[in-house]
Length: 138
Image 1 (cartoon, one colour):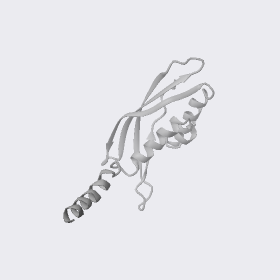
Image 2 (cartoon, rainbow, N blue to C red):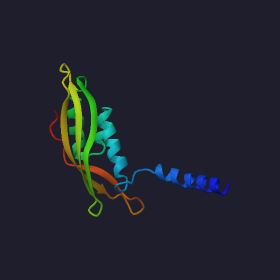
Image 3 (tube, helix red, strand yellow):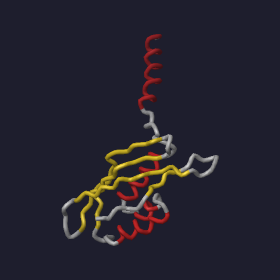
């Protein structure tokens, strides 16, 4: 009976530790970069543009809106993601797989993204924002 108790206790302790979430790369970096990626993947360009500096948002929306009916996103993923906690900066490389009708050939578009942690106030840790303009698409 005692062995069964120790076995159950051991399982009770180990199972939850194996289900722990991934370690966050910074205050909200994983969550923010994932939402940005999902916006592109689901063709929510206005939503994705909200993560850019305000002066570059309209350019992003217009770049993708120019192909609104013909652009089909197949996949979007980060190839790399490097975080510098002390500097409050991150760099990621995004690959967008898409096709433009009438062609059915899947193409890839790569964007090296520079993220910066924007402080909000003393009570909040800040939010991540994409620095710089969108490269030419497609």
